[in-house]
Length: 457
Image (cartoon, rainbow, N blue to C red):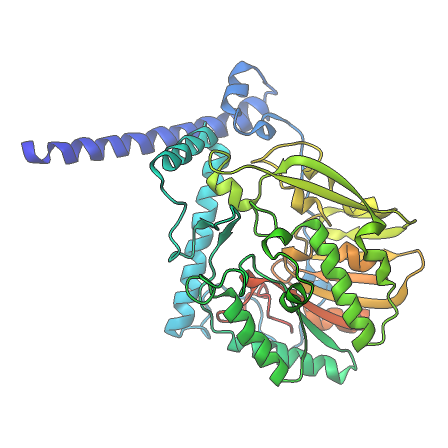
């Protein structure tokens, strides 16, 4: 029994800590929903409970989301299966089951981390203390052999590593979509968003620890063999001798707002040449914008994970055209339908308050990830309608496209559960652009959830 005593003590301590954490979360829930929400009580106790998250100590309702039945507005064809559970009877191969369960586990872990970070009293202070200790003992964030942790590159930029993926199903999905659009005389352009790790500047880990560029190469090669137009922004970065890492936030996986406008110009320059667009891309040159810089304002998703104990926040920049603009800006799921100048595309509630852990200034661009965003340029513009299928890298790029084109529609298929083909048939775009980053490609395509980014039906 004496030999087991240390193990029993250690087990008891662990159980005690878990009970303490669970009790702290219950206290936060009780304080938020009973004391604050129900009785309207705010005092020194509630301020202590919400010291790590001041937003919870408020009755204000933010981030209103409107529930829209996208499938009713844009129905699927009769031959398309209805949405089913994550593991469909038609997806029972070992690979698909493993992929499905891995996705489920990842979502559960994200939810646990989210609930803990929002509801555990003192979570941020405890995390920062732990990261400070890690720094003292020289503990790295994650090894270069892991695919679920943050690593630090030699120049201080934070990133995550991408594992090798089979992209054959993505190639097939895009080919089917391409042929469907071709029958309607609508061109398809695939634009590859770069990952923070460069194939040339990070040659010591690219292809050894990170396979984002190798996945890109495999995908683009397959698309070109199918006759699908491809614009590889990585190639444009190399041709223009741009410093790859400096196009991104140091603490986030996204590119800078200025890089988003640069990418919009590259896309429209290509469209002018390839599809005879008449976009005035000079409007997107850096000198055409006033830059409003918010110093040390943004702690990105990767910075939030390692905390301010191990990194410093980024500056954040908003861009405002120097020339007159007039947009009709529509975000149905956020209840936005406004006509104003270019500033209408910014959700300033995410930007005006410096809150490193509670706010996300990047998502203030274009109102962040949304099922549908529509921008109509009511000033002089090229009279084209472009449909963009995008991930979050499109947040700061979509408004740039709209500065030169008459209408830009953007769908995020993770949130838009309707039929893409139905949307195309109803809105008749002149061009469809698929704009995806490293996190969006690879693995099996789930045709039953109607939430897969490569379900183009």
